[in-house]
Image (cartoon, rainbow, N blue to C red):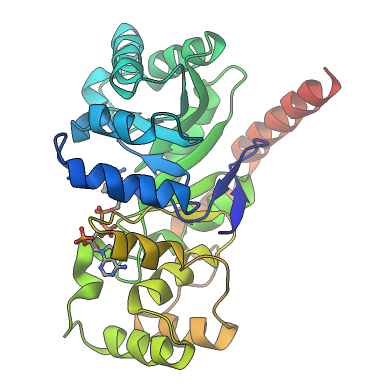
Length: 304
Ligand SMILES: NC(=O)c1ccc[n+]([C@@H]2O[C@H](COP(=O)([O-])OP(=O)(O)OC[C@H]3O[C@@H](n4cnc5c(N)ncnc54)[C@H](OP(=O)(O)O)[C@@H]3O)[C@@H](O)[C@H]2O)c1
């Protein structure tokens, strides 16, 4: 298993973690699969209060050395609701603190400053170790970072797979430049990849997989984690799938293979090509000011 640094933190996380959406709270079989994954190196486990399975995840991770990530739902973004939701997740998971607490989706009905002040209070109380966001655009990430007094956004969890490469336009290059980890969700296109007949992309993946004695899923996952700053969290219901996914880490597709996949699955957008990012880079004052502030804070922390 290869490890990557989480955002600006000193934390190192595996580049293949474990997704748990749609795993029922009473699935005993899922506990075995998750524990197999953790023991085999996939020590980052991702859940959410919305998945209604935190008790099961708590059972699966008990006594294990894991990095637990969960999410607060947008309907709980008011200050006191964030605190309540976090305490409830901690209880259900049976942990002392949450390693990565993520805002599940943006909610423009609640000022981000209010939500982030609760997130920082949780951090100061030792209830959460790192703050992440999910499904955030660049401007939403900027607003979220600006709303934080001293913490830094460690990650943005967004959809990213061979069939869903939109983030390569703007969000991914922005996160890479800003050292915000990208946690790729639905990295196997929610199972679409395992269905035969997905056309040219599937044929390309199959050819490359055969050439390297890998599975199609492994090629698809490796394509994502070959990118700097990207980790992926596939969900697996069987030990066979879990094992397969974990073995997507620890090696790297060649540039030629990556290009072939990229060209078949749609023209790869040139880095920094998207209109929002271009606009932002032309008028860098806001972005530069945020980066400067962040660098200052990091320096201060290092000096302490
Ligand atoms: N932040 C968000 O808004 C958000 C949204 C969606 C998902 N997520 C997170 O991302 C995680 C992963 O995404 P996802 O669950 O949507 O879908 P996914 O991981 O892209 O795909 C899961 C599907 O792929 C199959 N699969 C897994 N490993 C395989 C392998 N090696 N070979 C062939 N098929 C394989 C699974 O089958 P089996 O189940 O039969 O193994 C399942 O049908 C979620 O569980 C959740 O933690 C976050």
